[in-house]
Image (cartoon, rainbow, N blue to C red; front, side, top):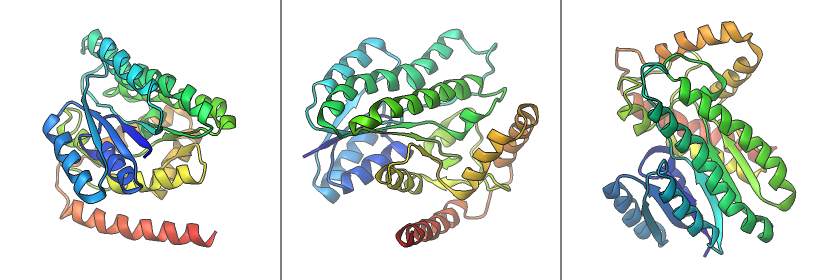
Length: 290
């Protein structure tokens, strides 16, 4: 049976990738730092889909640990998917945070995805098949004071992913750059960057992680390199690329703050979940008709 590797699979987008790839019949290799969450995922996937899940408790900023894991993946004969999802945010400014923290974020968001892709690409090329998904963010198109290193490292990941797609595409290996917008995950609930209350504002629309992943995998099936889930996020991507840089940066600061309003939404998660299911069905119907 083919295997899929998902980094940062403890929750959110990573967990959703693990669940949906398991539903497609893939065994899993998952990484994270919360053993209890990964063991819970392992039990759930075994019960629901009958797949095997191998857990790796791994700090991707640890170079020795990363090298050992890359060596393991490079020797895997049936790795069909690599999902580089692990990531995190910080609220400190560039000059107030320690440089070691900047190096750690660079290691997790850039070095680790590159190293793991380098480990699996030769075997995928030889087999003439395989998928590498690098999870970036719409924030990669912006410049913000509070998330300088996050935006910078994700922008680097964008360029790498698009270039890698050009190299590996002729060999049958698909590379996707996934750029979600605001997504309901532990990233926002646990991170010091953001308060816990969130709501939709104008084009800033929150999406459930399972919907983001469904769109991503459907996009891979259709051979698309860049995936921006959600109509509102697609419009934001266009604006980010077309609006003059100075104005774009001012709007980004004001808009991101508006998404994290202090007044809590009414039953936000339930309403968003229902809306996302309806939107997902509409997108599927539209795809079936095209």
